Length: 274
Image: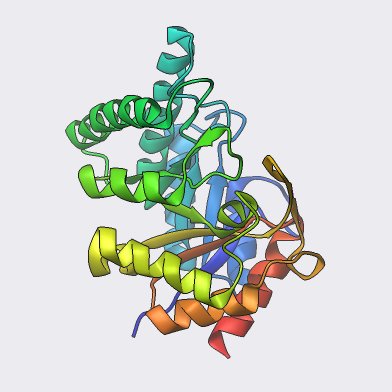
């Protein structure tokens, strides 16, 4: 039986160097299974380095994903920003594919003053075109729009499940901290099971067998996410979350985004495997 893989968002804090190669090696030393390469401030890695990262990850047995730059908004009022957003996603997919990453995570859009249905149509059009470009380029990587933690951001669970069901090559990144912060709910075993049930209803068993998860503690208010927290210093019911993962026998990767990324990754891995 396959098991969930656990890892870090970026190079572990305890790594002697901050580069991705060192990060992959440190993840292996810690006994973790995966790592998300963070391109959040721009795709600054070339194909030569990406090939080195691929070889190192294969040698170490570490599964990779990438996170595209933060400044993406497919619903921007400025077309140059929309085009730049598309390029950020495609560049991340290209370098991610070279290094053997399974998915590229990105924050899709803001609503601004537009109706959610209108924004859904805009984002869907872009993702249809982007997924076709990824396919035409022969890139073996999934586009993973992330569930978002603020009411002002496009990316509710339902929006992303419906869109993923409609577009080949697109699956959500399920950020359970964001889903909790977006309204202060979704923080019990029963609610986590409802989320996993919805995933299965929309995407079938494939949706549960190919999950990419972000998790941390989270500070939030009426407008949603404020900042990430260490799991044990938050109200996140991570014990109930792990129980739901076991109940639905999910597979895929779990990325810790806590301020102490490797400690919480190891905590979750230990609890899950116990």
